[in-house]
Length: 294
Image (cartoon, rainbow, N blue to C red; front, side):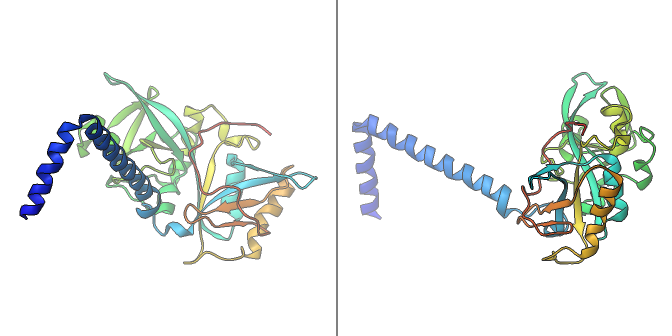
């Protein structure tokens, strides 16, 4: 112990006699510790920490592939009519849900705030296995008539930041883009949606209000993403033959030669309805609504 104290005193005297070297040493140690801490934080969030969803390995993103005559293929998100066709006819999935990221504004308050929102179908929360920490999530009939159900689920962070963590906010009305919206639920902590940073969720039927009228009727306007949960406890190596039935129906009803293409959030796995192909990208829903007509 005495030798250790003697070495420490010697090191301190030497550093005091060489302040330049001491400053470089301290700076190097600080940068090294900071870099390691940052890398570990990213690794923890991206790999080590489990996703806040039920059985995340069974979740798949589903996209439309438009195949050209030359063999090239282009991947698109979904229009609402095509999504409804998928929801009715795809048999490989336990459930499918539509979702899209967009920016909305909290208005009607002293300090308005830009919010990251997800506009989602009513099946979104049940598919992910996420319930509300207070109140409820969306009901099936809130996917109905466009604009008829102005309701919202808010994130735990927004609830604490702007509403003081008071559960009495459930059932009250807030303004989003100057539209009165009833808060029906509060999302659990750590849940930020497939967008990764969502503050608020609104029903897909509100797209006519927050985007533009009749967007839900336009077959050629591909503006939202789709996430699906596969049937069964394990992911299939090959999609069942009947999964190609949606692609055949789609080819008959539209001018698309299309297929449903999937990729799992983590680890990446992929299938294509009717054939096996590698997915172009893993599950990602960070893109906002960028309507484009075909």
